[in-house]
Amino acid sequence: MLDAQRGLMSIQRYGDAEDVASLVTWLAGPSASTVTGAEFTIDSGTNA
Image (cartoon, rainbow, N blue to C red; front, side, top):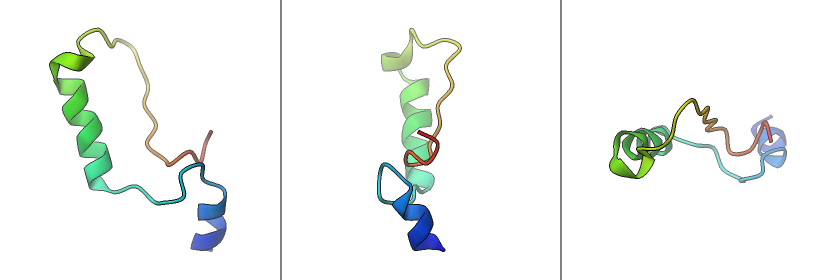
């Protein structure tokens, strides 16, 4: 089942906690200071 799911993903790997932590770090930093009202999905492109 995992291989079938991976086949539907744009990025052929499952994310992990570091992927989420990287986004949170970026959002908390100065590079994201103009980001407002955005929605970020970390799903390797499953819902693309």
